[in-house]
Image (cartoon, rainbow, N blue to C red; front, side):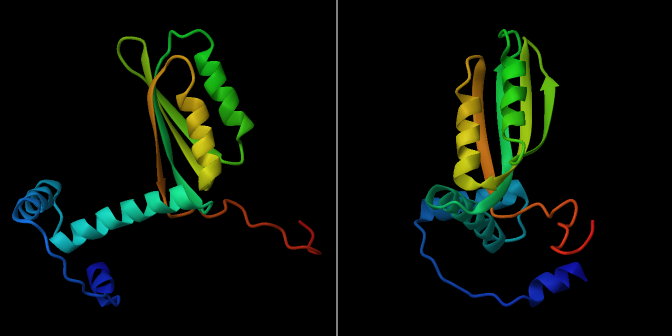
Length: 156
């Protein structure tokens, strides 16, 4: 039933020309990643590219993750990371950290907010001394409000 709903949505067909080598690489990627078709794979790539474009060009509210890998032996780093998250409590939804080998920690921070604001938060975190690497991944979607906002004139 769900697959039938997906297929009933209107679609536009386009035609593209690819060099033989790129066509072969696309087919390999489709098979390796388990896509049902080239169209499904290209849709996925386009969505990712368009989300990146939206992030770069504007200030649309988006949802995503900031993933950090850091040295947990760096003095004060975990507190600084926690403090920065608290300073941006409107954008930081949740975080999870996992202790790895060799004094490394991976932290995944769920964020939502205007793309440029979330990018600044990610840049602040990634630039901290002791952070080995980091990456912001945004998607053109939003988390629904957890609680409805009270209407004006209505008692909460």
